[in-house]
Length: 155
Length: 155
Length: 155
Image (cartoon, rainbow over the protein chains, first blue to last red):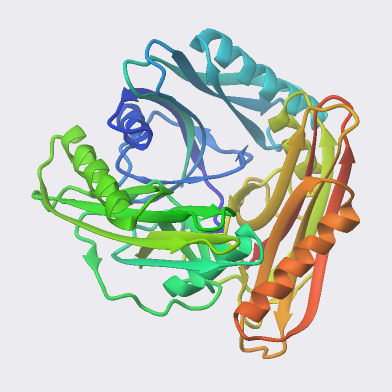
C-alpha cells in the first residue's frame, strides 16, 4: 500500500543530451538505469533498518518512491551537476536523511554541498552521522542536457 | 502497494477559468473528469502489456499515479495549451513512454511537440514506435485560466 | 496499494531556519511533526467519509500522501507564510477539497486566501461548504527560512 515503508534503497546517477529538456531528463534516467519506471518524488527519509543494496533492475513501469536531484540546461558548454547525499545516524533506530542538490558546476563541489546539507540535517535532529553516502552526475551541455542523481526506495 | 505496476491507462484533458491559478488547475481537472481524485505525478512510463481503456470514473479521493502537463496564465486573451503523448513500441514486451508539454499557443502545435518528444524518446531506447497517441487541451484566458492533459495509470 | 483511498486526515504546520532552503524545508517538516516521513505531494481531495483525527506520530520513513503549501526565502527579515484549507461539503457523500497557498505576508492573510480558494472550489463543484478548516505557519527569516502547512492523508 502507499503507506508501506521501504526496506531497501540504492543510489544511482546519470546524464544525457536530449531533444528537449524533458527528453534529456528521460535520457539521464535511462543512463542511471531507472528510465523505464514511474518515479514518484518523495521528501526524503531512509526508514530505520533499511538496507542499502546494489542497484537492481526495477520492473518496467513500476511506481517507485524516489528522492532525486535534477537539473537541465540549454546553454552549450555549460557544466551542470546533480547530487544526492544520505546521512545515516549512529543510532540505528533513527531514520536516515536524504538531501538533494543540483546547480551549475562540477560534481565534486555539488556533491560536497549535498553532503554538507545531509550532515546539517542530522544536526537538526540532534543525531550524529555514522556515515554519509553520496552520488552525483556531471554533464557538459552540447545543445540541451540534463543531470540526475537519486536514492531509489525499494521494498 | 506503491510498488504495484499499473495495468491500464487512459488519456484525459481539460481546461478552466478559476478564482486563482490553483482554482483554475482544479477546474481543469474537473473538466477532464479527474478533479475529485488525488493525482500523484510520475515520470512517465506505460508498463508493458498495459491496456488503454475508456476514461472511467475513479473513486473519489483515490490516489492515482498520473503523468500530466499543466499550464496556467493570468494574461487575459492569452492562449495556453497542455498536451501528453504516449509512444508505444513495436516490441510489446517493451514499455511505452509518456511525454508532457505545455506552453503558450494552439493545441495542435503543442500536441505535435509532445508527439515528437515521445517519438524521440523511443529512438533513445532504440525502439520503433508502432503507435503514438496524444491528447491536448487549449484555453483562452479570460482572467485566470489553466489547461491540463494527462495519462492516468490505473490498476 | 497506491490506489487505496485514505480514511483519515489531519492538519499540521511548521517553520524553521535552515542551512539551505532545503534544510529549512526539512526543519519546517520536523517542526510540523512530519519531518521523518516520505511525503508525496497529491492534488488534493478529502475522500468522502474521511475522518479528521488528531495529528499522529507516523511511522518513520513511511510514504505519506500529502497536500501541502511550502515557501522558503533567503531575505533576512522577510515574513513568509504557508497555509492549507479544507472545505467539507454539506452533502457528506461528496469529497472535500484541499487548497494550498503560500506567499510573503502574515499568516492571517495567507490563511484567509487559502480558505477563500477552498470556498471557491466548492462553488465550482456546485456544493455548499458545511465547514472550512485551515492551518498556517508564519516565519520571519533570519538568514534562510521556510514555512510549511499540510493536510496529511492517512489510512
